[in-house]
Amino acid sequence: MKRKFFLILFTIMSCNVSQNDERTELEGAIERFNTAFTQSQTQVLEGMLTTNYRHTNSSKKAIDKQNWLSYISKRNKQITAGDLQILEYTMDELEIQMYHNSAHVTGRM
Image 1 (cartoon, helix red, strand yellow):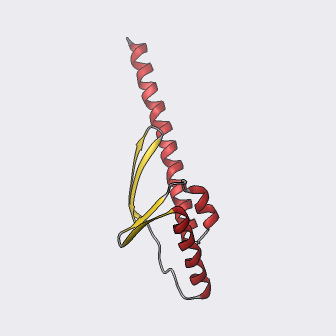
Image 2 (cartoon, one colour; image 1 turned 120 degrees about the vertical axis):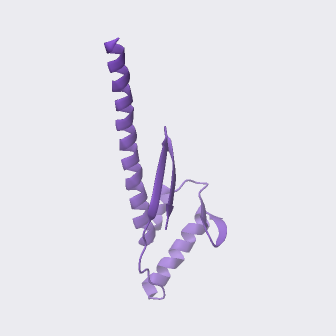
């Protein structure tokens, strides 16, 4: 009986370590995405987004991946020209719910 209990406990602990590693990896990806967004790194962003990516915000209609990357590129030109300045870009209220090989992530920008 003790062996079964140990095996089950070990299995559960192994799963938690793996899930923690995946969460840490996901948090790193979110950080890289936010940095790429702030710095208008469209190639980095393109590599991180799925083909069917849809971008939404609270005040406009959802747009597809290519239109959003085009917006980022135009925004970069405005920043470079001095017409637009990013004073602060932060993410808070980050919540991550892990589900096996996927996750549900929400946050406030």
